[in-house]
Length: 564
Ligand code: DON
Image 1: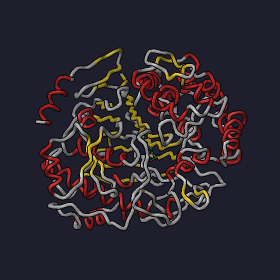
Image 2 (image 1 turned 90 degrees about the vertical axis):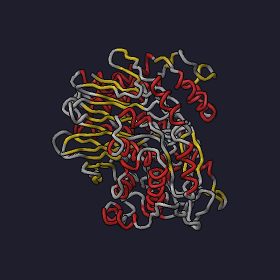
Image 3 (image 1 turned 60 degrees about the vertical axis):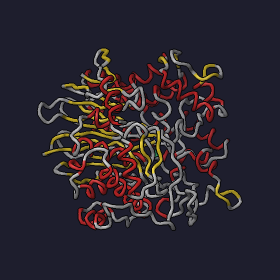
Image 4 (image 1 turned 90 degrees about the horizontal axis):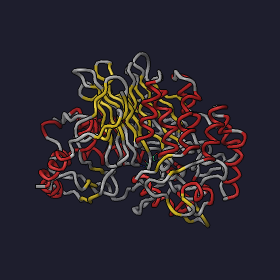
């Protein structure tokens, strides 16, 4: 019955609201011939599409969108955070720009302890939770190596949106109401994101003059406009007056890292994703496991498929916890083994298709992460593609704006493990690969991913959602490859999440029939219902006519496909 209702809702939504090439699409994907941006915010998607129309390539479009999101989607769009950009040119080698934040030099594994006791507030929401931001340096390096238009042209739309303001959407207003609770104790954040102390309402204009000033410095001087001079001094003044340790030298020393993508295959498609310090290897590990089953015939949303997915998720999250961290500090991570078909085959032998395996009781869970990050997928007319996920960690990051700078600082240090050796069933973990150390990058779940077929671009995917990212990205791939869904249907379809511990399958409320869920329970799974996970933004290249098909995630109402 639930399935029928869900289908009816979708049928009633098969209607496209089109305004000059921008659309909130329903179950049919929006199709475009030349170029496409799918991001979590309407104005920013349009900025990227316009840049490509003006002669920019996918890299230019992605960078312009990312800077615009830093203005129009302040909960996660950022210049004070970090992320990963996967670039696959139509010709030449794919490459990853790792602009993950780093731990300040004064960081220590036990820096979250007060009188020997772990303090979650200090870890996640304090001046000590701010990592050295990577976004500006990372986007600049990616532009230098692959952009086409002048740097200043890519920043111009963001500067205009910050200085002239833009109209607050219902979605942003709701998000700001929530975000203000944490931000209001920081005066500069309170002034910037509230209308004289009251959260912005839909239809009001949000102007961010200080942000415009900082963006102009970055436009003029590149990374030096951020990591040196005025901006750097203002950041450090705020951090150090609030008890943090980030220094001018930490900022001046920040460098993005160019890395080779991880490569896997799935049913004849090549899968490219980002290496540690992301844990996106889990996407390939899971797909390798699923390749041994006829997932398409098992069917979308059936008990059999949900059980199999859960067992796959359980296993890769255990490996994530045991092995992964910053490669600079963990030279012996068994990446080749984790990514191999042989290892997947050995994991398959441990899966019982008739019952749930337990997650080991003497093991541990990961600390909470909130669902605020953002992803954009961009393809240009030559079929160059960018898959970019970046974040402040929590919604609105640390909530801290250094006075005069106009942007939020991340709280990414919260992605490090809490305390050496302290691993318990309350959600704390103390394994060594991901303990805080000077200059180290904290482990991430961000998984910007690209699929190709016969060396041609096929799919660009990614999502926010903390640890759920890995499972959301994998499910968008299963939906397209195994369940033959179009890009929009693949994004719309219900999702599940399991992360080894706690030993619970989280399922989106609207997504699955009661039959399938009770079947899953009878195999021994605990199920907890959730409103939704993630905000996936997907482009699929139609293999018959070469058209770009976009899937924007309506779990976040502002997600938009734009292009031409
Ligand atoms: O890097 C990570 O995995 C997290 N800091 C991302 C946080 C996140 O995705 C919250 N999301 N929506």
